[in-house]
Image (cartoon, rainbow, N blue to C red; front, side, top):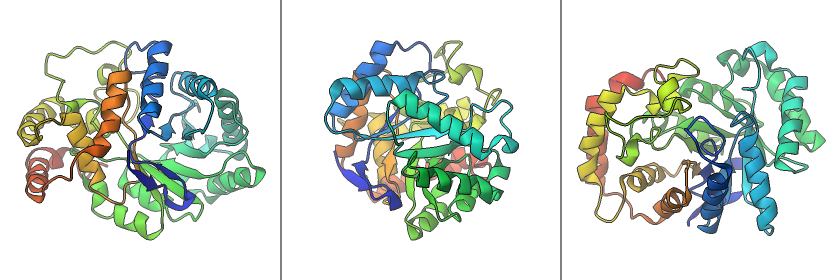
Length: 328
């Protein structure tokens, strides 16, 4: 497992992390034991960065992480969580210092720690990015010792560029994958200039880039790939990266021949993201031990030839770009 630096946090972390949304909920039925086994497998494979949120299973994900780390003992991975989506309604006026501190106190209890390594505002309404007092509240919580670092999980490039204007923002979490390439155009360059860490989520476009989903694939009622297909509950860009499923499946078939022998399509898709040195860590999810191990192994995939990168860019330009580029 290769390591990278998480921006101005200065933390050395594995370039493949563990996204803990799946072990919390909204991905179909995953038992607590399966979630624990998946996380243990990732940690055994050298993963040292874990990303979760207080709303993943209403705290279930955070509690599973706490239980696994307590049982393992020894050196702890860097654990990032998120706050804000517990607000109901989820509106900018809810992002008060008192509410943010209450969310952080709950995450501290769920994770069983005295200080959180990293707290990220969880895809807040765009208006929040224009309220300096929100970021001032996070500065205050850093001084109090409840958090070491803070960042923002954003919905689009415009929000990312606005967020890094605040000097305390240490990381940005954003969607970036073969089907969502716009962040590379401008944002990555600006983030590097300001030494902001980049955490890449939805790296496999909700499983599309595993190459295992077909038009006949059935998803459980509690899987967001069924209930949020058209953005019914949260930003549609979080589900299949916002690409219409029929278009995405056609694109997958054009990506498939480009995958080298001995490498899975999922590993190839992760390796494509790692071609960008601006990226600090990727956080693929895993339902079981095998997926966690396979994700971690993507760190060993050889560099992708320039010709292949050009072919992937062509697939994006011809099929995908019109559906996503100007939206996110």
